[in-house]
Image: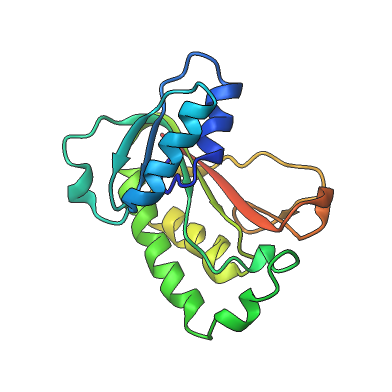
Length: 182
């Protein structure tokens, strides 16, 4: 679970997939400490790693993984219904900056995904520039990657991945794409 903090997804994985080993990483030491506290409170264990998911060298010597979750930093436009101030805190250049970071994260984490393994790319953004556009370019550049995103009722099929709009299933808006490595 890259970009793990504050640890909710890590906890959900550990609770639902009994017997798995999870490595949870984040760039922010303080936020990773909160993840550790949350996991301890729930009686769950994960290997925690402070690492910048955009920098391949920080992962040098790391094992490879059968499953990778990349819930990447984004503009958070999918949660505006709960946090309307997001509209005031974003500018026109934010999506491009986030997309650049997202591409770097995707490249780094793909290098850690085992053949036959999967990488789940997710954002809480509604902007194609941060979602299908990032994944489409990645797929075009990686012959060993294919989109194997499962359908969710109510989700919109994009050129790659799927988009849920805010309010669908009473949830925030988000995008996801499952990529399988050949």
